[in-house]
Image (cartoon, rainbow, N blue to C red; front, side):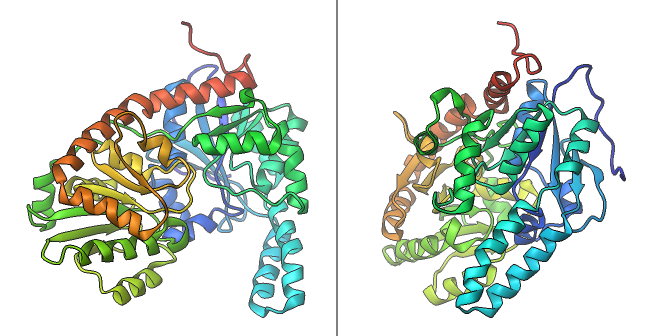
Length: 444
């Protein structure tokens, strides 16, 4: 195995968790945002994945990231430079890659027979993506005492659960937006037998936690309500007027912003385009700006949608940036953050906005209500309709002092509930319940 970078100095008897992010091969995610595996290891930070690494480190648990990549031919041990976490990149099996190629051909050919064959081929691809024997060697070499898999609604979780039983290692899983399989499918049948045997489920949205308990007949103790963390020292309020000056934006403009991956359907960007068009139509004389920062597979379609809607005042940096200073400057220049997503796990982008003291106007995706609603809300939650989103955005852009006040509340909410220390305690609690002799709680 090749080693790139410098591994952190380990403390004696430090418990270790292997964290497996989503993706049969990780390029399934990286390709969509235009980031290479090398850039992932050297530049990428933030998001739930590295938030977990940070939160666990603060409670004395080391994290090893394990992923599968089509760009490696043998196991490679690297280092994630921003956090110092070890990263193992493992090659996928030949069967998996062959099944993927067959799936692509079936998808392209169309026809009734191709459609009937596509599901079983995808099933084979999903369950052959993980290499248990190689993963077991990595776990032994790193001294891992637990496995944590992104998404329990995922074949990799099923495979890892079996491996964990064989090795005597607890397996936990997170919710980051995965959707359940229908119970009548073979995968759904498998899931009905694996999820109840997990050592713990880590779920942010209360609505999802309730649904999972009911779907699989779980007790409350088997599900830990734990959100994604946000570093409140890194994400702080910036000077609005200085940021506007730096970006060439007028001081008196009413400005909304969004950042993230350009995935039209999931991220609700079609809703955003329609909503922004309505906001502008109802205020023909107002100086309105919408700042967008992000790229992905949906770039061209988003551009076409904006051209067709003939929206005004849009400033779009159309690449997925790993430079968080760019994102912080855009948030600082804005009066509010808009979050039109249809489906999420426990989204980090609105948390970043709230930490920067910006009010959030959001569609009711999973986790959003948990973030924003309360006695003193840090934003507005609406249904997944352009008209409702436009109405809420418009009200705050018309009354920016109200938006600024909500932003201050949002900042306090993040500080109190979602800091790495607070989330780290929740993660450690779940690990302690899974393996109390390894993952020790701090003394009272």
